[in-house]
Length: 425
Image 1 (spheres, rainbow, N blue to C red):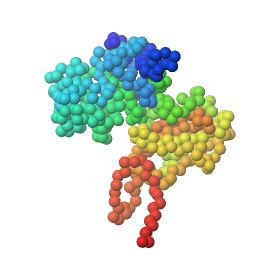
Image 2: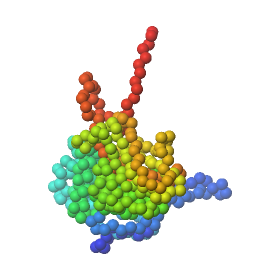
Image 3: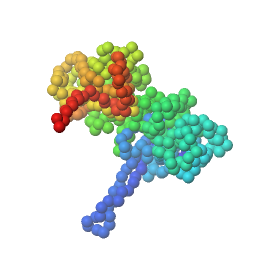
């Protein structure tokens, strides 16, 4: 259904999508049982003109189903929606391409699916080809393409189509750093041009700076719709299977403006630390001694620090730190419950907690830190996610002679003890 509402680009009312799965044979009859599965249940939301909405959720939460409905690929079982006439999107790798045609021929074919005149899109072929970065493969049949090449070409075509609504499903999960950088620059430009976009992603920290809000889906239901930093909290909690204490979602989450100012910084200072919560995070930061002048940190003497105030608690609390790489992929977890050295925190007062990482445990790269304050039954009292980040550079100090330089693809690069035993025979 197309949208004539001037205020909202997308309006969804009680969207429900049911699927039926064949079950086993009914022991009391000759008929097989049929199980109903809800990909979406009574989902309602609105997206304003010019708004960029991130969509988060675990696999199977209903994210892609939602985009398929909004793009007209499938129909809802019940409910209704409205979108602009000029709506384009990337939903599945290879969808909309003719596998027998070359990438070059598929540019006009794919754009034609969205009503774009062939002569109009042909004028943009050099720009599309350069942006995609697939090189000479542009002349090869697309049936030879990888999933990543499909998405890169499709994305490159769509961004050269003037539309009112863009639907993107995991476009930042493919391509090298150069392509992803260009894609990020384009998504940023959407905001300045007042274009509307819905972006499904498993890497929310990458798109958080230019998303106005995030929608979090959980098992087909609307779990949260609101400011980015709160959504990042909830999405990570779902991923970890953790419970959330009532009222803790907003307790230590920064405002949207604070997120924009602090994302990419090694220090979070809560200017509006509330005192009506059981636990309040006052400061959260990364420390390194000595810190390098270029803002990257040495892998030695690296610590995660927290200043907090306990107002009232019924049981001791603990800390869970999660280190994520720049793709929001968790690479390490530090749980105070696994340490005999963690001091008990059970009385009201102000405390400073310092967690020192083992020397040289992290490889070169960029990292963001999640902080969870939890009870022993893993209920989250408060949390701060991906507001602080830091870079590690292991290349400080004099180079060793005859050293083989290997760039590690892994984030964890520990120092280990090596031993050699000679065979006496």
